[in-house]
Length: 176
Image (cartoon, rainbow, N blue to C red; front, side):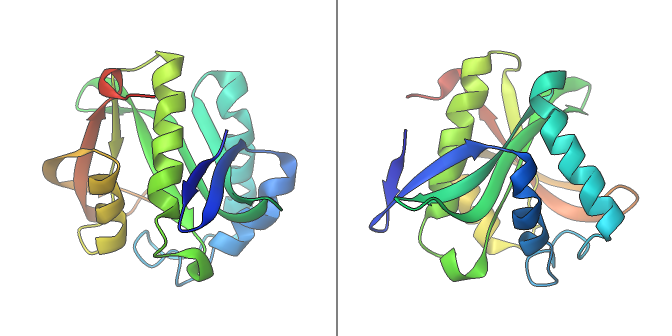
């Protein structure tokens, strides 16, 4: 199923071995400026393996974001389990490549991924932790219906702390 935005159909597709190239395209200084910068090739390969294992391990789901009809890969969206304030929740993240930003694609992809997370029925809440200095990602949270809980110190990447906004959504309240 695809959702429509800015004259294009947007679809999220489960992460595959072939998405490593997309992960590399997202791993640039511009794309990673709010989350500690680009990762090394070893870190990228580890992330790719983790994304591939999300579903088999029952820990979440990662998707590529594609524009139809030709399935042009334009970004990533996904969610994975984490413990946050003594509760197991899903944490969500996304990336849209620069030529496709500003068209609402991220909000549409996030909404589709939220519906998938809700359908799983594993966790009540899902959080997103964009940097307080990342207006675009904070706008996606607002557009997707998240509630701003407040600012927090958030560890990402591992070993590095950043000031983030804690956005939360009650998955039970997500509509089809």
